[in-house]
Length: 311
Image (cartoon, rainbow, N blue to C red; front, top):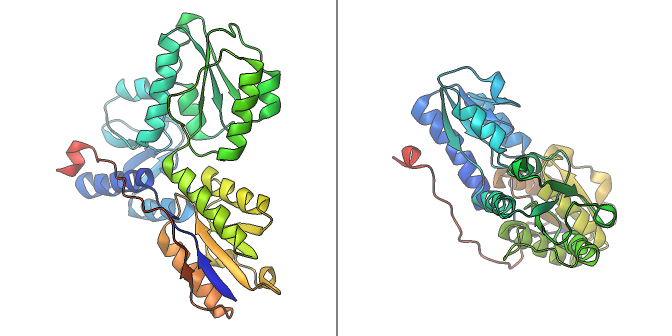
């Protein structure tokens, strides 16, 4: 059995930055450092940070005064920002800058008197944070749609003053269908100048499409809570390939590889390369040949850290 590695895969710049913020805060201020929600959606990463002294909470109210608080890469609502500002807390914002871009779009649409449609998954922290950027004092609203049917069933107050944004980690193909449905239903709807789905999500989805075409089975390294990892698995299946989402090598089942000649391996944007290495070692132990890495886009983007942590 041959192994093919997707490229790019694994950590993106936003995830790197978020993890660095937590680690540097622990280095500089010591434990405990409180993090609202999982800083990124990966069990291995969260467990490592927890072992260093990071404390993950769901709400600001669970955090004592006079401590360091970090907002996760998924972003938070204005309500959470204001609640933290009203407390004696030292806050570092690890929100991915590409999520912040969507927040600013929602805020601008709101201030311009436009209602807004967010395409995303209900209950995801990024969705909660993005919907929480809309100012309802102007008598407008923000609506969540998850699929084409939601878009076709949507009712808004003023179809002539309507805009849309999207969660950054969605399937590009699915999102295009939802946008098309919104435009059919609301011809006057406006969107952002550039796609909201982030570069890393796009690159990893393009890479998994090629990987699935060349493989019999695709393994996606990533946690079940990771939106972009789930989309990679779904995309590989749509390309006609069996695909499995795994947290790591311990989840691999030998029965998946009966009569398999090529297994493809990729990783979601919040999965570290050490987990990919473990998966490769497990596959080799099952009789696979050493991996071959496919060509792909070289990512050179990086995001700056908060000034205080840089120093």
